[in-house]
Amino acid sequence: MVLIYKDGTVLVNHGGTEMGQGLYTKIKQITSLEFGINEDNIKISPTNTSKVPNTSPTAASSGTDLNGMAVKNAIDILKSRISGIILTEFNKDVAQDLTKQEDIIFENDLIFDNFHIDRNISFKDAVSKAYFNQVSLSATGFYKTPDVNFDREKGIGKPFHYFSYGMAVSEVLLDTLTGNHKIIRTDILHDCGNSINTEIDKGQIIGGFIQGVGWCTTEDLKYDKNGNLLNHSPDTYKIPSVQDIPDDFRVELLQGFSNDNVIRKSKAVGEPPLMLAFSVWLAIKDAISAIEKHKYEPEFSLPATNETILLSIEYLQKKLNQV
Image (cartoon, rainbow, N blue to C red; front, side):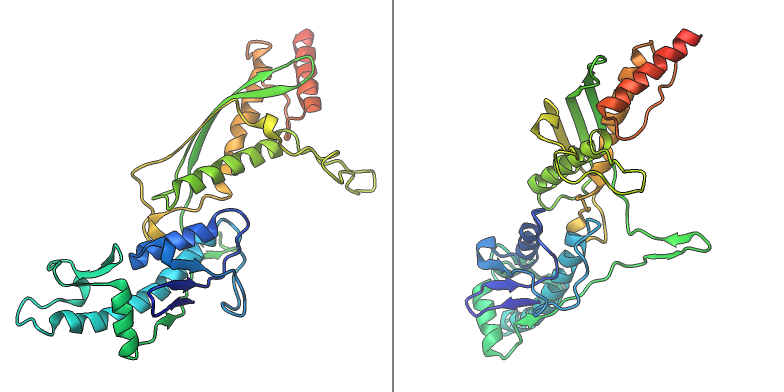
């Protein structure tokens, strides 16, 4: 639900949950870009089902995709209404070269004719004219991901709207006496389409990768003989800390590959980078293999805890002694 007020300010209500991933910031940026107005004139209302009911879960990295497109849908409705009023205003004293609906541009807090830029009006004044012409300045938008389907029995269909791609190379230093390891350097190149906010996206990539490092190296679940989980807090379930961040950490976004048919041609970025942490797990495995000059493939499991690493080294040395 998007509301425009007489002073030209905008209030946006959407169904996404902000959990520190920067969704509200991205929605504000999307609103600014679509209306062509300054972000200072936009407020994002805290998510509330009394405003936007029956919201979808903010999950699977789809928060910006779904809510951003729904907001755009509402904005397009409002822009169409305002354009109708402004079109009449631009053409009232023009005998030829009339402004057409598709020529009207919203940009830099102005609404103008793309081919006759002298025909322009401020967004604020346009909103005032729409108000006095009894045009509704509120609209509800909706979006559903198109063409997603899958037949589980036949195993055919299109279960995903698009795919996210990333690449990571990691270098580790391994202590073969204790099983401790240190990530010396990680380089990541990740595909975010046309990033809406590069700093937020890089933050998500870094956070997702480090979460993945925990999954791949330290987060080891233990059970008793009856199947009860023994881990109960961070003292028995080791999550990543600042010491697990690579000494040299380089993250770049893939440039020049837009993702059409998605909000602002972007891509989801919350969870996909988690998989890039396999580069750390494989680097540890390669370090173990290097002990015996890569003659044998180590017995190695996930996560690569100190115990797993030492057992893998021991198994490798026993195998060589047998030979």
